[in-house]
Structure formats: structure tokens, C-alpha cells
Image (cartoon, rainbow, N blue to C red; front, side):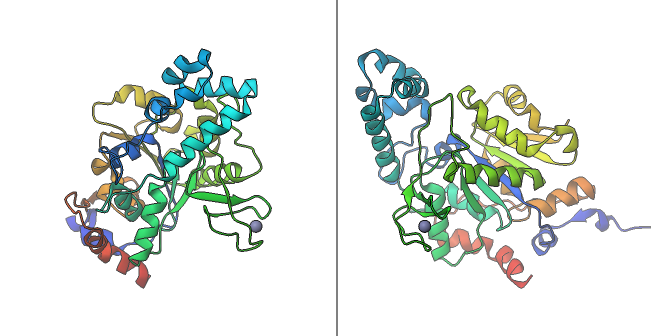
Length: 343
Ligand SMILES: [Zn+2]
């Protein structure tokens, strides 16, 4: 008779297993930055969501009189109107203000949710963000300085203030740095597009990012959507994601995980992401700490396989939520990182 232990996976066994090579795809929306910096950035500056952009950045003043009101209730719609009128001076002014504001946002010094997120996934995994703020890259840079160099690959689906692009060589890098091939300074990535045509096929940076996310969605075993509510104004984005994911009936073992704010309407979220969910293979959480990623850090694939394919009882290995020093957070991940290095 087989031992009961054959059906159980201990935390230590989970840590020692790095056999899965397929990627976990994590999509980040504005809700993730809100959750990470709910009291504002290092200098107390609020991290605005698109809807509140005009109000928070006082952008309504840059719109012509007849669009001032609309800009405060539906910034994207007002921007699109301005775009269709070809008001290039106003458009440029607004884009510049947004780029300036987001470029100056900074992570707080203590360990942040962005550090936790980055540390929770491996190099084979990807984090694709819709956010313009520099927090994901800031976190990756400071973790690299502490010796964590095997990081999940970041992609920027709506452009990003910290990322530039060389259109000639199709290479991206940190904004302000130079392209290693031609020596030109990377052009900042475009942030704003009119609602009607988001320009995901621009032949440049945005297109390269979308090509990557579609590829990874096709090959992933798990999709986690954190703080992205798929606004009606961005149907094209969801259609492209769907194209990558493929037909839901062909994704019968993949798991979809949705992390949203406390008190969110679970049924509405289930409906929004219906085309990404196969029958009962989904979970909705109201906090990152409750997610599969936070409870099986750097081993989501192995834990997933043990639970869903192997029908085993897996133990949680939750990331502590009370660590404030970044060095201590990295130390907590050390046993996981050590096993990966040996393999
Ligand atoms: Zn170049």
C-alpha cells in the first residue's frame, strides 16, 4: 500500500523542485500600483489611474473649453476628440505633463509590493504591465543591485516612462541610455493613443511588446491578472490578449487567477474574463497575499502541476507580509534562489 506521504508535498519539497520550464504570465493594471502605493509614492505623490488623470494632474486646463468637463469625467474620450481635431500643440502639452509626472514617481525605500511581485516569479516567467509608472523597473534594478539577477521578463503594453526604444535597431532599453548598436539615445515610448486606434501595430515598441505577450499567453500554464479591469475603451487590448490565449476549450488545464481590490464584484470579474476561464479553473482573490503566486513563490508551476495534475495535497509557502527591509525580503527568498542556482 502506498504511503500517505506520496500524496503530500511539503514546503521543502516544493522549494527543491524547479522542473517546470513553461512561463507564468502576470498582467498588471493600475490596481496593482494602487495596492503597492496606496499612500502615494516616496514623496507622497498620488499614483493616478487613467480615469482620474485630468483631475490629479490638473490637465483639464490644457483642454479647449468645450472639452474641459469631459476631460474630468472621461479623460480618454476627451483626449481622443482632441486627437481627431489634430490639435497637436495641446496634445503635445498633455503628453509631456503626463510623462513628466510619471517619470518622477519613485518607489518608497522600504520593501514594496512590487519587490514582492518581482521576487515571486522566475526568469522563465513574464510580467506584462499596462502601467506607465516606473515601479516595476525601479524594483528590478534595485533587486539586481542586491544580487538577484534572474528576474521575470518585463513587458510594457501601454508604453512606460522608464523605457525607451531604438526604432532603427528595434531594441529597447532604459530611457536616457544609449542603444548598444547605433549609439543613439533611446526614444521615449509613446504613452497616449486615441481610444479608437490604440496603435498596437505601430511597427515599433508597442507592437514588439504585444507580440511577446501573445507568444507567452499561448505557452503559459497560468495567467494571473492583477488590478486590470479591461476597460471598455480598450477592447482592442482584450481582443489581442484573447488571440494569444486562444480558444478556452483548448486551455482545459490552465488556471486563471484574478486579483482585485477588496470588495470587488466577483461575478462581474468572472464575466469580464470569461473567455480566459475554462469551467472551474479560476480563482478570484481580493489581495495579492491570497494569490497562488504569494503562496507558492517562484514555484507556481511546480505547485500547480502537483495540485492539478498530480492531485496531491500541497503545502503553502506564504511570503511574510511584515518584512519592511528589502535585504531581509531577499534573504527570505534565499533558499529558493539557492536551489535554482544549483540547477
Ligand atoms: Zn539603435
